[in-house]
Amino acid sequence: MPSEIDVYGVFVPSFLVLMAACYLAMQLVRRGLAWTGLYAFVWHRALFNLSLYVILLGTAWTLARGIA
Image 1 (cartoon, rainbow, N blue to C red):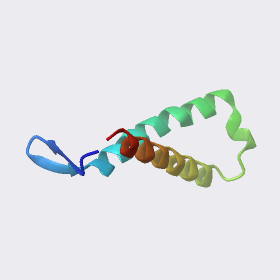
Image 2 (cartoon, rainbow, N blue to C red):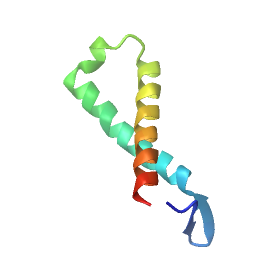
Image 3 (tube, rainbow, N blue to C red):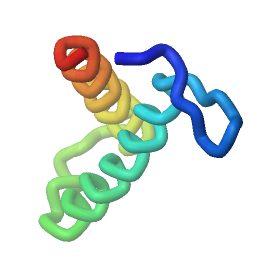
Image 4 (cartoon, helix red, strand yellow):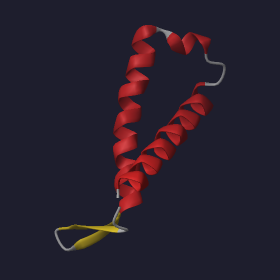
């Protein structure tokens, strides 16, 4: 995976792009968890969301490094 991505002449770190993509994926996961009612089993919602985001980001980073 390239270390930087050119967006209209501005070099953006590839990790920042992955962070934004994982944020959008996290929003979908949060809506799904709220819709199914699985948040009722979570003790600390904000801590759970943070850890889920970190897991998504780590998985995306590992997959992106494996592809390139």
